[in-house]
Length: 328
Image (tube, rainbow, N blue to C red):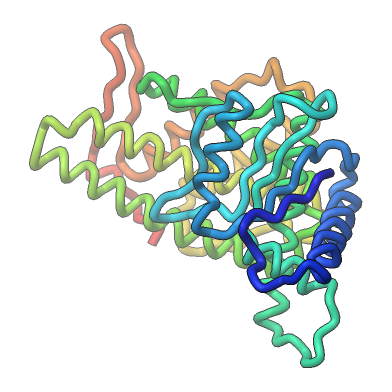
């Protein structure tokens, strides 16, 4: 594993630079041990400042013949990105990591003159979990030889489903592998974020539909946004399930009283399906994705959306009378 500090940790002199590299390597080694991953699954660990984070990802993706993308939207901005390396050991990956998150991970293992507050400890535990999660992706790359490096080149309900299925499986695997690094406070935060993000997605979906009512030319874009939004709800939920699978000490029964019985029914089915799929890991080449596709359709119906595929193409219907209740 080659640690590269790229225009970061300004003010660190040469004398302490080696100590910094050693500390980062040691923390990464702890994370490797927690994830039970081999050290050579990481080809490079690049630490960069937030301003250069996106451009560094795109540079590494281009150098390794990968599509140029990473999470950067109103809901989430990635703290790290793992990319399957074109060179190096037989199957290895490059992790690009924000320096502020690495500083938090380091803080868990450094001695401070003054004690840290519980809030600081929670933040640092999150930072260390993010590192373990990225190593979980590295381990998954080795076991499945799959980079989940797909692009949404054609817009249809099926292509959107295929695109998000690859990402969902990659995140499920990384979450299971890294779950031993997840503390209860981090898990509770992820649950809270999922519920908050889902509320925003459902609100935005309704907004997209009403935009179409005002301008019929927006139908295609509105349908695409709504379809993708509901897949993101399932994708983020899969991360919670993965953490539960990988860490039996985390709460296994979640109490979300604001969710309707219909929504809870969809999520329960998805939960059971993902656990069944995990029992077949890493042999995921023959999974019946139609079951997850149906769950996505059923989730849409909970909010009045009916995604239909037929010989004439894709159709999206909206019935306000079928809205049982918002996620709010």
